[in-house]
Every structure is written in structure tokens, then in C-alpha cells.
Image (cartoon, rainbow, N blue to C red; front, side, top):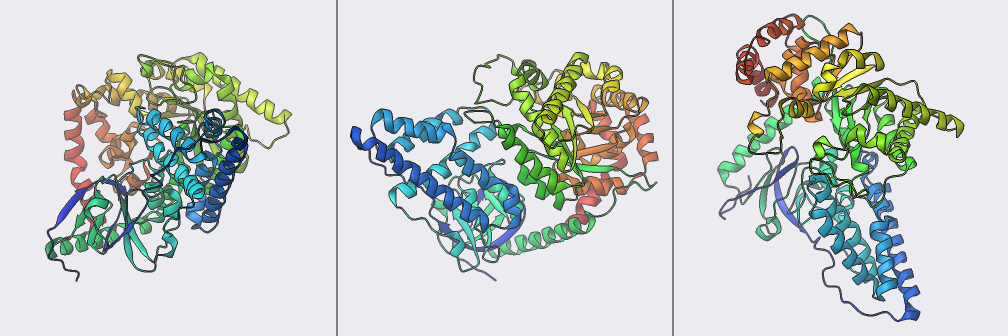
Length: 590
């Protein structure tokens, strides 16, 4: 057993990839090229300086492509490195650097660093977490170009020849995709967050990772014994004998949990009275498809398509969207992939379209309203989705429908997109189910009319609760009133399900409410046909459904509907199913 006389240190970070590992630290120098001198370029030398910059960019692309070709198949499917290669072509980075060289007559290194500095400042001021974390992508690709400009060498992670835990200020997707799983047990970084590509690759490779530790590289030295708990987001440096024993037991429990998930992920999700339900996954990035499959998803119930639009100097092209969508559809085939069309602005910023500065974006030009007003943005996405539908099982849904004319107009756009594809003689499939998201009280009230225009409903409880209860979930003063089990919310769900059943169309739920095991009996009893959630939530919800009958679920609805508060509803569910949920959690961990 590993021993150390040094004082134990516990660091808290962000749980980027679940699992526990114990081993020796291996520090990776990823500090970048910090010392850049500025020197003038004579008029006659500007053209050669631009050429030198372009050559460095080409070398960086070649390096990334080589890494991509030698990466594990799962990482190749994730398409993260393709995203970074595309970033090297982006006008925001590539074009502005060339412009700076030509305009300011400065060396390429200084021009690139100045451009990147301005971009970083703009991104870090954005309210959206995903946008802020794209700073890391920009830093990674610019550092790679700078290394080629300056001739600086970087450590080759692929050449590590012993069993270690990587410790770095930051790791790029290129770094993590070179990880040899026989050598690297896990990794920790100072930087990074929940939606960082580095963390997502760690999930894809299924190795423990904790990010956002801030002081890891200052605290840890080479060969220090450390424990990485990627499930809780904890790192223990110089662990005591007691901590080692405790985490060895946790590691054993987690391995058992993974074994249970693997074994049960292929089981049918049906109640004790043999009613089958499909449990699907919500994803935001293409690379999350791997996690959805591993956790036993019956398909993708919500593919948020915004990530390709955020933080760019211009909107993605139709072909770029199509290639991305087709990859996801082909990997999931024959299981369904439900695309939610673009849902911006609201709580998401569009860097490509800074003209939309609204005082209350949640009630403004967002989601379907934005798309209907911007056909030059909407039509390419619809064409890309219809083209991807020729390669697998695709469904489409429009977000934030609040009026009857919106669904009529959106479907007209869809028909126009199909007609234009036929004219262009491109393969496509218009014969796909088309649904709407029920997210505002107006859609609940109008559900009987809207049902006649669509093939399915999908209830987005995150927004439905917010709009239905008039609660800004981001406002700390009232966030405690944001209650999924509020009787008003439950009655809106019931009415929507009743209308769907009367019109013989399925009704799904893709909000966070669907991912809680205690809610599953209530949702089934209310008449939901499919539930979609974060991939990690799937195993417990599936096990819960296999432990109950639809008959008792319908019975509990009668009790719930007479309750007056969210607390009373919770107590009914807890008293009836709470012990079952607790037992499931315990069984899957021990």
C-alpha cells in the first residue's frame, strides 16, 4: 500500500468525468508560449510575414490531423479535434491576425497574441458558461500556432511510459486524445469546467478527471501520491492510510456500479405489469453520443443544436451543420435522434449577431421567434436536418411555440427547405415526425389545437416551470420557488398528456424533471410516453421503472392531484417510493 508522511491536502474542483484512481502525479508543462516580443516588419517584408503565419497555421492543422488519425475511435467520433481544426480557419482568429500583420506591420507572433487577447476578453465577459469556456479552445489552437512560429517544443503525452495521473494547468483536446489508457489513470487541471471539451473527452475515454482546481500545479509535485475522485470533484494529495483505505472502498463500489450499469443497460425498460417505456438522452455536444450509448439510452430525445452557433464570428454553413448532424444520426442508427431547432437568444448569446441586445431576452426574440424572423439562419439548419434524415432515424421539434400561427409558419419553412433540396438534387427525407416543445402556459392552453398540427409533444419542464410560475431560475431571491412538483406544474403536464392521448399523438418529457427517479412513477401515471434526460441519470430511472407497475403509478396521480403545495406532493412520493429509490442507489453502489 502507498504511504506518505507528508500532510494530507484536499482540493475541491469540478467533477468532469466520474471514477476514482490512485497513483503518482506526472506534471505536464502546458503553460504555453508566454514571452512574445514585438518587432516591426518593413513594408516589403509584410507579405513574407503573412506567409510565415499561414505556414504555421498549416503545420498546426497537420499536427492536429495526425493526432486525430491516431486517436481512439471514440474520440474520432466525438469530432472535437475537427472543431479545433475549423477554428484555425475562423475569420475571428485567422483573418484578424493577418489583418493585424498587414495593417500594423508587426511580427506574426505579436499579431496573433494581440488578437487572441482581445477575443479572450470579449468571451470572458459573456454571461453564458459555454461561451466562457470556449476561451480554452482559442488558447489551445493559438498556442499550437505559436509553438510552430517560435519553434518551441511541447511534451509528448503519447510517449509517457509509466502508470501516472496527469497534472496540468490545462490540457487541450489534442493532449487528451493522445492519452494511452494503459499508462494514464486519470488527470486533473487548474482550468476547465463542466462543458469543456477536455472533460468530455475524459468521459468518452471513461477515465476519472477533475478540472477547475486552480492551484493543482502549484500544490502537487512529480511523483506525489494523489487520489482523484472524478465523481465528487475531489483530489487528495499525500493521502493518509485512512484516506487510501476509504477511497479504495469507494473505487470498488464505483467499479461495481459501472458493472451494474453495463449489465442493466441492455435490459428492457418495462414496468412490472409489462408496459414498455423508452428512456432517451439529452445531449448538447456530438461527443456525448458515446455516453448516451454507454448508459443504455434508447435514442437521443433532445439534441440541443446551439453549440455550433455560439461564440463564432459567423454562422455555421449548411454543410458544416449537415456533417455534424449526420455523424450523430449514423452513430445512433437505428435509434431515433430528435433535433431541437435553434434555441437562441434568451439565456444564450449569439456572438455572430450582436445586434440583439434585449432587456428581457427570456421574453424576447428567442427560439422559434428568432428563427422565423431570420430565415437566412433558419433555412440552412432545416435543410441540414432533412439531409441528415436520409441517413437514419430523425425527428424534429420546434422550441417555445406559443401561438398557432408559429407552428404553421415553421412547417411551411420546412416544406420550402425540402423543395429546395429536391431542386438541388440532394438526398433528404421530409417524411419525418415533426413535434413542438410545450414550454409556455399558452401552449398548454392551446394544446388541443396545436396537437392537430404535429406528430408529437415534448414537454420542456425547465422553461415551463419558469414561465408557468413566473420564476427566474437564475435569480437567487426567488430560485427556491422554482419547484417541479408544484401542483400548477403537475396540472399543466396532465392537461398536455390528456390532450395528446385524445389526439393519439405521443407526449415526451425532456426537462430536468424527467431525470429524477422519484418523479418517474408520477410522470408515467400522468401519461408520459417517453422520458429524456442527462445520460448519467438513465440507469437509476430505468431501474425505478422496472420496479413499479403502471397501475400503481396511475393510483399515485390521484393522491398527488389533491395536494396543495410542492412540499405535500414531494411527501406523497417520498412516503410511497422513497425507500425504493434509496435501495436502488445503495444496490448499484455496493
